[in-house]
Length: 266
Image 1 (cartoon, rainbow, N blue to C red):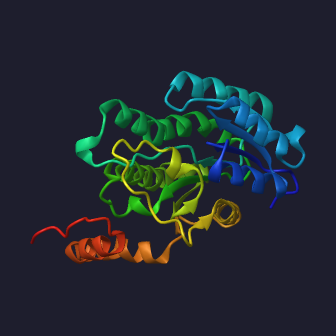
Image 2 (image 1 turned 120 degrees about the vertical axis):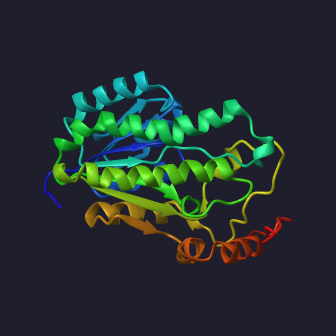
C-alpha cells in the first residue's frame, strides 16, 4: 500500500454494506467520497467516519446520467483521481414475474445495470489518474443462479457480473483491476426496503453475514485483487452444478428455499 492515502468512491454509502464499507475504508486511512440519494443520511455517515473532514459526500441518483456526470466532476475537483471505486448502490425486487410492475423494473435496471455502466464510464479518467486502481462491483450469489421470486433482481446481478468480466479485459491496458464480489445473505435494511407487492416471505437471515464482514472483503480485494470472490461456498457450488446439471440444481434450490416452490417437470 502507498504511503499516500488511497482515494475511494463508494456508491450507495448511506446505509448497509455501503456505510460499512465507507467506515472500514476511513478506518484504514483512505479518503472517501460517499454517494447516495439521501443527502441527510449520507452526511450522517460522513460525520461519523474517522477524520470526517477528509471525506466528502455527494448526492447522486444513479438513474440520472446528468447527476452522475455532475457528481463525478465534483469528485475530480475535490480528490483529483481515484484508486478505488466500489459500485455498491442497488436495490432488490421481491416479486413473481406476474406481479412485477414495468416502472419498478425500469428503476431496478436503471440503478443496478445502466447506472453501473454510466458510473464506470464517468470514473475511468479518475481511475487512470490513480495509483494501482481497483474497481469492486458489489454483486450477489444469485448472479450465477436465478431464483424464483427474485427473477428481475437476479437478472440485474447477472448483467453486473457480465459487465465486470468485460471491463476486466477492456481496462487491462490501463492496469485497472476489476473485481466481482458475490455477496450472500447479509443483515442490512436491504430486504426490508425492497419492493414486495405481494408480501412474499423474505429470506431467513439467521446466520447471515454482517455488513462489516462484506466491507472487510472489499478491503481485501483492494489490497490483493482477484477476478471474482464468492462469500458463500455453498452458492458457488450451486452455480457450478447449475452449469453442469441444471435439473439437479433446480431440485437442490427448491429444497433449500422452501416456500412452496415446485421442481420443474422433465
